[in-house]
Length: 192
Image (cartoon, rainbow, N blue to C red):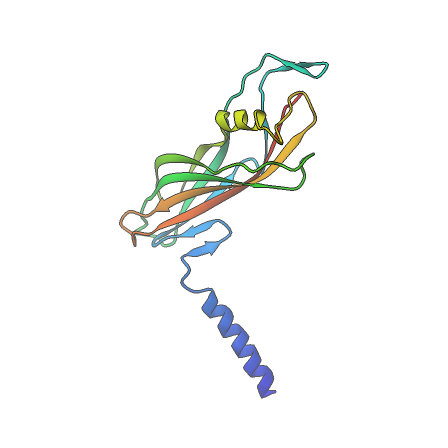
């Protein structure tokens, strides 16, 4: 009986100690001195049309434009205490792509993209931030690749897991910059 109690005590104390002091609650939640922050993509499965407004006739594309697609992200700051909560400051957004299963063909790698950003978020507030999930330049790179190029007027789809990482600080807090992450899935195709 003593061995079982000792083992249970060891497991519980290890779990408690490993969950302390990380400064991040997990699951995309950033824990700051006076507030917690979350970021949630409004669309959990975003479909990006590589050429917008084109017409496909017998497999040939005419017209249309290649333009940046944005996904809206709700960024929320929630006070931990009833008084003394501080604003959060977002200074940068990183969009990270991981090829994912589920496309019609394996997706080629996409480099991270970055957005310089300056937004203050008050405690207990939510702001909706449009984030460029796939830029015009990235689409042109996918269209013009020597290998694994995105064909227009086809049923080809590339799928990516996308992490939208906000670099956030709490002016007047402990001075640390922490990531707050929203996640979504991106399907890239030429809709017909």
